Image 1: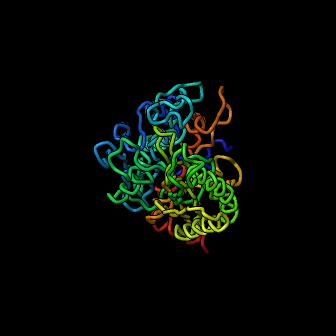
Image 2 (image 1 turned 120 degrees about the horizontal axis):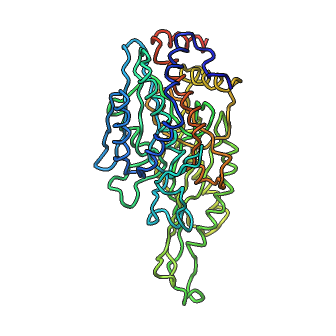
Image 3 (image 1 turned 45 degrees about the vertical axis):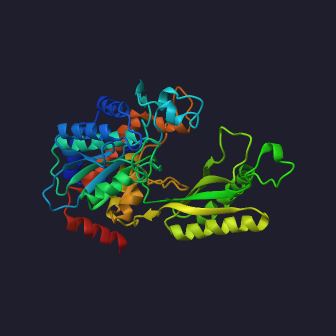
Length: 449
């Protein structure tokens, strides 16, 4: 890692970035992340956290506001205004947690009980902070807040606007049982943010992975219905018997193997799109004596930027047709119930070049591309609306006084890693919103040539 992570910047921008970086401290990062973790923000209920973020940004000198989607869900955004001659840049992070942090909604699906890290309450272990969403997404959101606050307090002379945006509904979920709107997740907040005019020329989304990613998967969801015979345990040996639950198990096993072949066919760029069978529904829990006529499975199939949702749908339907042909009497059908295309930002785009240069300056080596990714974010919403976007974030914590599983990886953040990500965001921002639009366009054209 270089001494200050600013190699490659001219003297003016180097000085501005150094001035901003002086406002970063472990204490302030800890204060920001614990403040975010301690306010619950499950998908659909981000309103209180959005208000807290807006108030915090306003106190640092930003023009900021919470942006309600309804009476419970809200985005937050803040703006540092430039002189109008340069490009506008958005530093973006979602703010909703994947799980809720309450037994009534999470248990037993998350495990037999809620651990300390699965609840919306921060705990500090020296360099580490744990709590629901402490790393993903709230640690990343805190870094966006810290970078924006530091640039504001340093008084960096901006040519373009720097926008810090925090989207509700960024997790891959539909409405929870207590929700009032169906479209509370899947980028609903990011879409609303853009529709309401919070728009920029470029964007950086802060989400996990210490690499600059310019492409990522989209996703399609299918509801798979498996038919059977409604019958009674006492009549199994006397009447036709075709258990939809058992048939659904056959379908799930078949799809789990097909997903592996699908991923191999569609791996390209930095993505390796995966698929899973995620839930099963069928029968009356109160009536174990009878079988249902149908059982439904939910499937998440990730798609690369190189294929459309319709192409993925046809591949999936062809896979089910092959299964039906090999299993006489099997009644299985599917409906595509959600589709978000995968997206890509051109490698020569200004924002990709600037973010990559920042990574290389911090690491003191050539950028390391991480391939095989299958995670989708609101970057697809930003790119899909025409904003060139790259993704940069923190790696999962590897060393801790406890075992790091999937949930703890989401719920544990390192302050040192937060500082590094914040420095990256500051350098990229200073490199972008202190230039003229003509200068940035000329640099991008030169890269393409």
